Structure formats: C-alpha cells, structure tokens
Figure (spheres, rainbow, N blue to C red):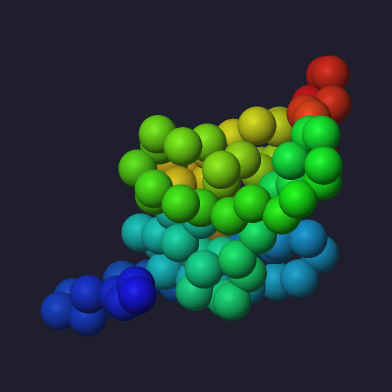
Length: 98
C-alpha cells in the first residue's frame, strides 16, 4: 500500500522502537518508519486494550499515538524521525508526567 519515492538519495537514521533498533530514512515520520519495519500497532486503546495503528497518516485520527523520548501521546504520523530517537508503543492512557 505504501512505497517510498526513490528519485533522490535520502540519508538513513537509526531509531529505537520498543527496544529494537531500526534504520530508516531521515524524511520518514515515526509511523512510516514503523510501517516500513513491519510494525502495524502503535498503541492500545484505553478501555479494551485493543491494538491500534496509523490510519489516516495526516494527523486527524490519533490512532498513531506513541511515546517519543519519554513524552506520551505524540502523533507518530506527524513526528519526523531523528537519529537516536527512542519510540515506545503507548499502552492505554498516557501516564501523567509523560
């Protein structure tokens, strides 16, 4: 469903997602990097704990919420990766202070 444009070179960056290091393109969003790595779930719902993944990829649906560098409820589709970034899937409600 998704594929990268390959008409220009883009540098790679390394991010960590749930403890695993991923190499991705510097122009990717967190959600796109997770999709490219085969990770389809970014968070679980508050009430039933059901897995949710990026849906709209344009900041409208909020199904791509992740924890980025210790800060919860970040929209993965609207957050560009950067080298050394640490991403965690968000389980349930965001913890206060995160």
